[in-house]
Image (cartoon, rainbow, N blue to C red):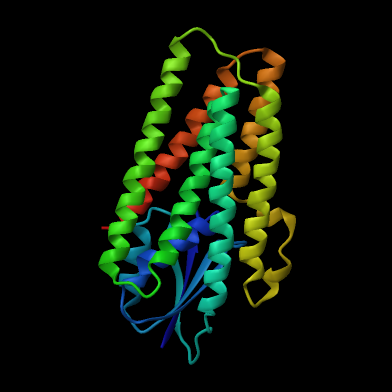
Amino acid sequence: MKKSIFKISHMDCPSEENLIRMKLDGMGGINGLDFDLADRKLTVYHTTDPLLLEQAIQQLNLGGKRISTEETETAPQEYHSEQKRLLWTVLIINFSFFLIEILTGWISGSMGLIADSLDMLADAFVYGISLMAVGAAISRKKIVARIAGYFQLLLALIGFAEVIRRFISPEIIPDSNTMIIVSIFALAANGISLYLLQKSKSKEEVHMKASLIFTSNDVIINLGVIIAGLTVRWASSNLPDLLIGSVVFLIVIRGALRILNTAK
């Protein structure tokens, strides 16, 4: 059996981890996967050709590059029941905040909150696909992934259209207080999700420091919406909200394209 280590430069949060799991699940000869989000590294225990593994990972456009391959005797044991429980937990957290943010975003008139809600929904999709695929055929997994990817893409494009409409229409100033308060709670939710997923690793990452949490794109997005809310209050303009909304919609579209690429 071989052990190959990959550097995944754009693996910023557990949703990317699950995309990689989905991609490699359909390949034969995979004996175990060991993710290190802190260093953005993936260790694959396998009997298949390492070049095929590298090609599969590169197809995800996450900046994957093989560092080394060597012979090994053992692979880490994966605790599927624990993983399912944690996936359900983070799915519920992400989907709950999707509902909270899209509702408060609509009421407050904030495109930043609406866009961030779709990012939460995107993560929930990835966790949900992973759960639905347990014990299912690869073909079913791909069908579910394609449905999720197209739905996510459609929502993001609708969001972009709304940003354009608000840009050319009479200015509507969103409620900056709602933007800031809801984003702070979303920031805490993302931090909890990351902590729970990292705690499941049976190694030093159980005690992951706060610096790891802030490497997540989700957390950066939350901070961006908070800053946009403060800027909206200071400038009495909706432009900061439209700007952060556009950026997050682009991130959601990128995530949707990755899911669709994984489902090929």
